[in-house]
Length: 190
Image (cartoon, one colour):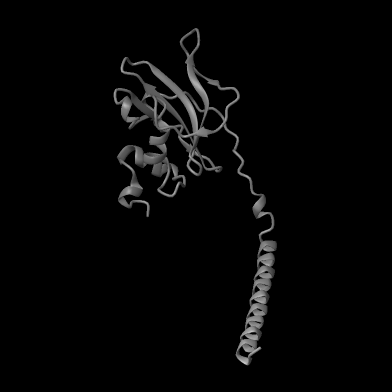
């Protein structure tokens, strides 16, 4: 073999050994870092407990934009019962008022972080005409919808509840968005 080739092979072996040592050192440092954050990979989101709020009252309702195909309907959020939970869920009562004046009332939760919605309860009237909540059975999180009369969930997420990164806003920011338009669009919350 010629001398130049031998030097090249030896240099390659030296650099390969050095590269392996660097990888090993980084692996060891990574292991130490993970020991400091023990259990971080075990984090599992857990929904907080919830209770049904008072039934929506007309003077607490704030109008929002509904799905474009349902312009004749009025979508109203109960500002008094709207809450942002420690679990990152926005819980709210919504009244969907048809053009004839009849109301569909629901109590929902919306997660900005993964674009999901859950319907906890719906409103009804008892035999005496008293309005009350009925808990839904076997409820689960579902993808946010953008179509149909219940397509309001996409509008809520994009225009009122969530920032442009998919994080939930604070309650006062959501109320401000409902009353005056979305803040992050005009830089209000930056």
